[in-house]
Image 1 (cartoon, rainbow, N blue to C red):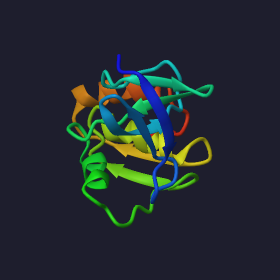
Image 2: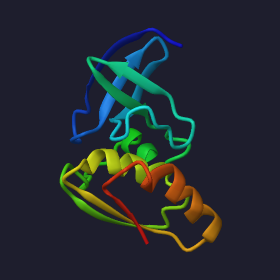
Image 3: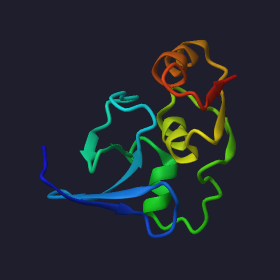
Length: 131
């Protein structure tokens, strides 16, 4: 595991962080369900908090942020309708961002991935409502 050097807030978006270590800078969110991984992501503990590394190769939203997304209306306390939540990779990070005062309405049609969404995300996150 690379040696952690610092964690700081993203310069443009609330509740998104930069984790800096020997590998460089990577996006992360504060884990709303400490100790729980959704898709095998790395968990980083720092200053009494746990952060989840946000993989831009598994999340188009994370990739967009890295590519210079100018506006992100999702912030703490937001209510989000997430269409096509699949197994919950990006949806779980949105859950971290909106926090306990926000809500994510996660819509998924496919039964198999809905089971994964239920077991890996909704079961551990009080702010995710699977539909």
